[in-house]
Image 1 (cartoon, helix red, strand yellow):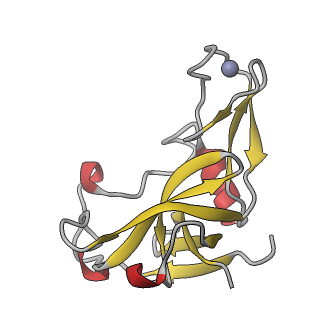
Image 2 (tube, protein in one colour):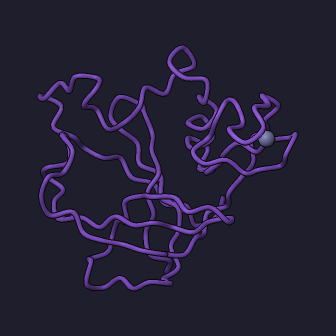
Length: 154
Ligand SMILES: [Zn+2]
């Protein structure tokens, strides 16, 4: 997909985080039934599930629709461009593994009708404003896991 940046992020790997404190989920097929979400991220695609029965777009991705209890779900692309709806800056109390990144921006991004929270990279808090266009960015951990963030559109 065009314009999707990616970055390999370093973490302080000497600190072995207990699973309950690890911000990044276990993404493998054996660990989660939303494994396709992470496989799609590896292909630079942000996706979620949509209920085939009631057509509700679900976020975060689900295995059962919380609206109608159907398990007839399909994976749909959300695109790579969103709009900043709200944002703040993390200065203190970052989750374990993120302490060295402080300060960093986090926000709520409107994308394909959903509001999703994400880190906003490559932008200082004071340079952001509500309504800014943002682009999907994929981060890759050294252990092969992936996650999504956003960056200001160029
Ligand atoms: Zn449904």
